[in-house]
Length: 358
Ligand code: E4P
Image (tube, rainbow, N blue to C red):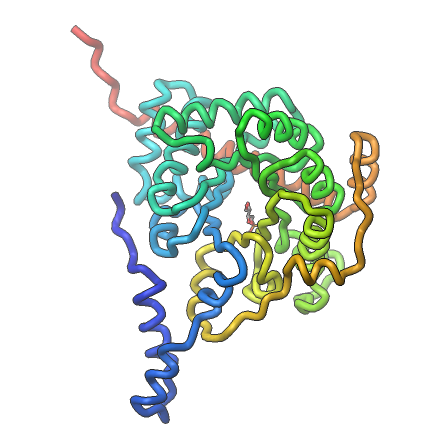
C-alpha cells in the first residue's frame, strides 16, 4: 500500500485554523476560530460529497461517501509510480489480452478505492462503445463480473456511461438487471429528461465544461457565478427532477472553482476533485443551502418530457454547446484510454517472462 496522508477532517481543521488565527487573537478568540466550521464540513450538511479522482491516497485522505473515476483520471493514476503495482497486477491477471487488462485495471483501482469509502465507486465503460447499446451493456456486465470475483457486489458499483441515446437505452436495460448506472458527459436538459425516464440511478450533469464552452465562445476570462450557465443547467435539471418526483439522483460534476460548488449546495451529490476539496476545507464559513425540493417547487415548473429517439435527437441537436461537448468528451476519454492502453502494452512487454512449467 502507498503511504497515506493525514485525515483532513480532524487534523486539517485544527491546522488550517491555527494558521488562519489572526495576530490579535488571544487564547479565547483562537479557541472560537479553531471551532469554526470549514466550508467543506458545512457543505456536507446539505449534499453527499464524492471524490472525483483515481488517486487512492486522496480518497483515503478525504474520506468521501463515494468516489468517481473516468478514463482521464485513471490514466493519471496509472502513470503514478505509487500505483504501479495495481497496473502490473491487472496486466498479469489479463494474461496478455489488452482489452481484458484495461477492464482489470479499472476494477483494480475501483476495488482499492472501495476500501476507503463507505459507498460506491463509479467505473466507466470504454468510450468506443458510446454509440453501441449492446456492446456497452455487455461491457458493463463484464465489469460487474470482475468486481464480483473480488467479492464486491453490484450495490457498490455505478457503471458510468456517456449520456448518448444508445447508452441511455443500455442503462435502462442494466438497471432492470440490478446494475446501477451513472450517466456522464451530461450537458443538456434533453439528456437529463431521457435518463430520468429510463430510471437510471444517477446522473452527472457537468458544470465546468459548460462554463469552459461559454467562456471560449463569449471570449471572456470569467463568468460570474450568478450567470454561470453550468450552475444554471444543474439547477434546472435538479428542479425538474424534484418537481416530477424522479428517483434518479443528481450529482453535480466537473467544477472549475469553489463558487460553482457552493452555488449547488443541496444538490443530492457533488463530485469534487482533490484540489477543490482542499480549498473548501481551508476556508472557514457556513454554506447556505441553494437547492432543495422545497425551493424547486417555487421555480418555474417545466412540463414533463417523455422523449422518444427522434425527439431526443432533435432537442439535443438544438443545443450547440451540448452537441460539441458530448462529442469532444467522448473523443477525449477515448484518447486517454488509448494512451493508457499503450502504457499497458509497454509494461506488459517489459514484464519478466513467466517460466514454462516443468
Ligand atoms: C465526473 O464524473 C467527471 O468525469 C468529471 O467531473 C469531469 O471533470 P472535468 O470536466 O474537470 O474533466
